[in-house]
Length: 85
Image (cartoon, one colour):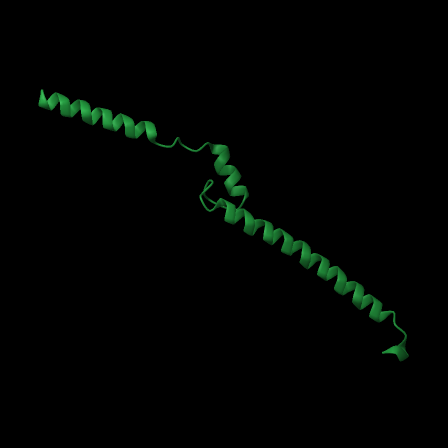
């Protein structure tokens, strides 16, 4: 009886471990992660990564506006009268 009980307990334990395992990620999840520039799926750090991505996007917009402002300033300086310089 002891070997049968051990075998049953081992089988029950293995079944529980397999049932609690995470399912394999879907292929579209990996493609979405690669589009975001990452090789992994969603992680515990995903919120921080998204925050960094948004900050980079805002920085790009800000730098673009700065370039436009610099060009406008240079153009306005070029239009100034010579004795005002």
